[in-house]
Image (cartoon, rainbow, N blue to C red; front, side, top):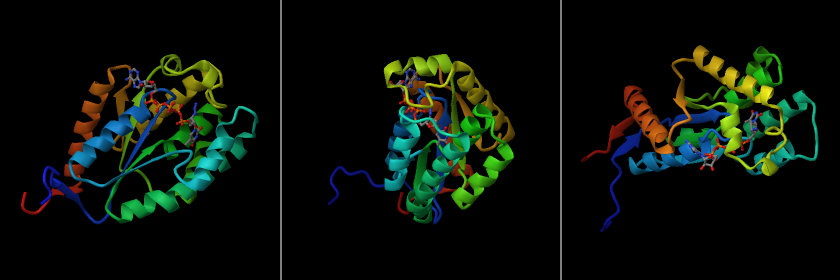
Amino acid sequence: MGGDIPRPLFEMGKWGFFITIEGIEGSGKSTLAKGLKLYLENLGLKVVFTREPGGSSVGEKIRKILLSKEDSMDSMTEVFLFLAARRENVVKNILPALQNGMVVIADRYTDSTLAYQGYGRGLPIKILRRLNKIATKKIYPNLTFLIDIPPGRGLGRKNENDFDRIERENLDFHKRVREGYLRLARIAKKRIYVLDGTRDPAEILEEAKQVLYKRLVEKKKIKPMRGE
Ligand code: Z5A
């Protein structure tokens, strides 16, 4: 019975593990998320992938409003929409998965708001941190991968005609976002691991896998399945 289906190698404790992936546009977040999901599933872990803005049914509707090229919006309106989508994602996806001992991988989360609306748009970081705290029920990532890449290079990987409302911002905005991310990484050294995004995707994935495995073991988050 079971044939070729491999037995899980590891199991997770009662409370899961929360990974976020951050970086400017085109930095390779989705590519890394896919690779890490497969890696963790091969270890026998249950993985939930989500993205922001989005992730939930309401969140995906908010995403359309946020990224639409048709409308401009006030910076604080933008913040509240990102946070509304985040709240739904936490309540509907992230929290239940963590409570069930799963690994959650989120393509963008709280650091995006600090980097884009804080460092990019110039809104006060202290207020954004407080709002993030309320929106997330204080559910913060255990580990964040920040893929660092110069803005010109990230945007250059995408078709200019498909740029959304935020991608259309000028290069200075994207430079401030990148610098903001790096500043956040210096502040939260233990949580945020910076990956050089100018390399080959396979190399980036390999480094991220090693860091993740070490962190899961160090934090005693995974243990071998009984009988292994
Ligand atoms: N935003 C915000 O302002 N505040 C917030 O609180 C939140 C978000 C949550 C959401 O866009 C926008 O919302 C985003 C920030 C803002 N705005 N901007 N601008 P998104 O996250 O949906 O989209 P994105 O940031 O522009 O990401 P993306 O387009 O999905 O890119 P990515 O996931 O980082 O990259 P990718 O899809 O993995 O790769 C892009 C291409 O590059 C693709 O063709 C790959 O094959 C290629 N690629 C990937 N890695 C490499 C490497 N290493 N070398 C060469 N080519 C590569």
